[in-house]
Image 1: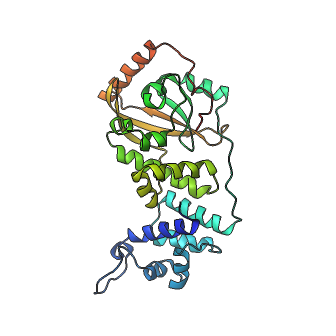
Image 2: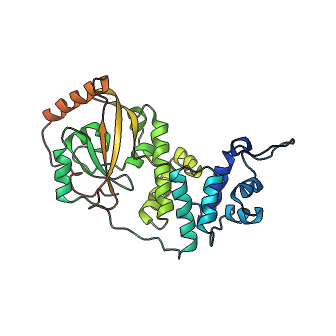
Image 3: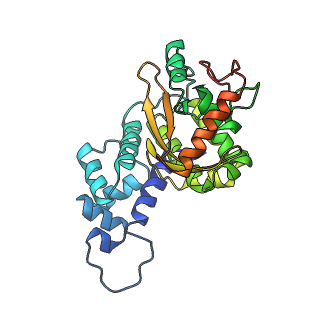
Amino acid sequence: MATYREDVQQFLTALRARITPEKAGLTVFGGERRVPGLRREEVAQLAGVSTAYYTRMERGDLSGVSESVLHALVRALDLNEAETAHLLDLARAATGPRRAPRTKPEPRVSPRVAQLIDTMGDVPVIAMTRLGDPVGSNALGRALFPDLFPAGKAPLNSARYLFLDERSKAFYPDWETSAREAVSAMRLFAGHDPGDRALMALVGELATRSTEFRTWWGGHTVRTHTSGTKKIHHPVVGEMALMFETLIVASAPGVTLASYLTEPATASADAMNLLRIWTADQAPSDHPAHARPAPH
């Protein structure tokens, strides 16, 4: 695993590499450029700091960097909201006391939240932890993602499913997009809480066992994915285009509710109706995801 300084260095290097001088509004004179994107001195110029100061930052030393300089860097590198949050998290980790890796209590949903999820029976809903462990779901949510909920067994971690289970590539027609989104979300979590032992253990496992994960983790892309669309190939009802919304559960820190909808009067809506009928025909069971944390 990369050190904190290496994370900062790789993140800032990747950010300046994607911006051309023309995009940044800089005048470019003749001569061959040896680096993609901006040079260090050009980033320093845009941020209003000396080249030596920016070089120190890019080498992984963000200790003592003021918020005004950080926000100048945000403007210079044209960072989005998620990238800005990640940069500020990295700087916060540099200036505060370094916390030893620790094991956090596993999030769980209360019986009341589990009951709420069940009453949302017309919409597939899954309660997920920051690590991608399902800790609650309704029958339609389990039916929509059958691979995550094997009968009679604990639910599968969604990140392990994406990167270590070949079935995921058949389930997600645009597998790479879904997988990259999972990596970027984990990057955000890691920057926010670098001492999260369970998260670091999961990252280490995936980096060891998946070339794709290892490559994309090293790219330091960070994005938030609280809503959007994704396509799946469901084994029972076929192709579906899903719209997802992610909701925060205030009474269950570390747990989010992922809900899935389809556009009305579309083939995907017809497929969802078929799935509702199919789910209603299945015998009810005491599923292990219901109101209990999933083991790692």
